[in-house]
Image (cartoon, rainbow, N blue to C red):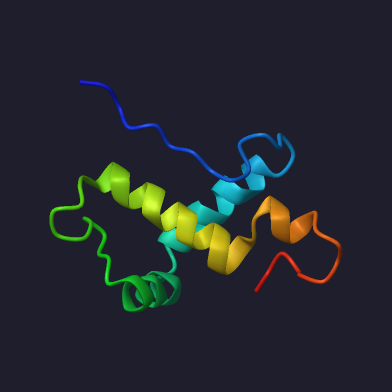
Length: 86
């Protein structure tokens, strides 16, 4: 069995990738952030029923953190009209 591949919007940015992974790690340990994620997505720590294993949850949570907390490369490297933090 192969392990799920974890990807982020920051995979091609060696300077920002560690910061993003650190943010995801911090967010997983922050009860307020996890509660907001659950409220906004209906997801739980072990996934939407039938949606997969905890590894898949981490991918969904990471994607949400990029869009709602940390920002994506498009947010950071845009024309300046949009900030990294929403």
